[in-house]
Length: 220
Image 1 (cartoon, helix red, strand yellow):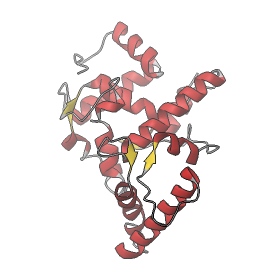
Image 2 (cartoon, one colour):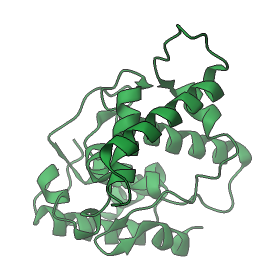
Image 3 (tube, helix red, strand yellow):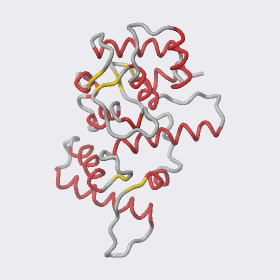
Image 4 (cartoon, one colour):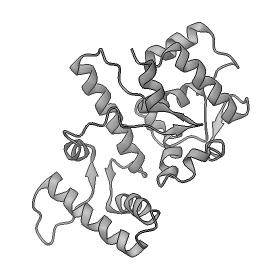
């Protein structure tokens, strides 16, 4: 677990800057946010993030919070989740919402895009089995649609099922009547989102700070 004293030293900041792409100034500001949320403790727990008012009305609030505690998002070959995180893990997860710098190679840009898409995939692959199943996909769509107030649960469920069939046709092509679509793999996920610009659109409002705007202002 990434443990830091109340004020990380310059060497720690520089190490984190190289790892996450945040500037030293951004890291200092995010460290202050971390300390506010954790009430000056060295670790954050889920209940700390549940106090963020900007997340209260977000239909995927649960998935966003869980993403901070998902080992896949801050450990190589990580499996499962943790009960608390330190500042390094917090910053690593926040970096997925950071817009890429302007002066990078196409190879670097593609690497960043793939990492962001993997993060999004992990967010919805809740049982960590490598696929987003119909049930997982249906849950997300139902939450998005039913919370708008315009549609009931059953209508939202029907739309989710139809959308999953459309995803299946894009991912694997025409299916026989007796075939069962097991779910979206990461490779299917990449195929579905091919051509869609995602790198600068991922952002959350975090303690009254829009990470997309914040990061664009400080990108190099």
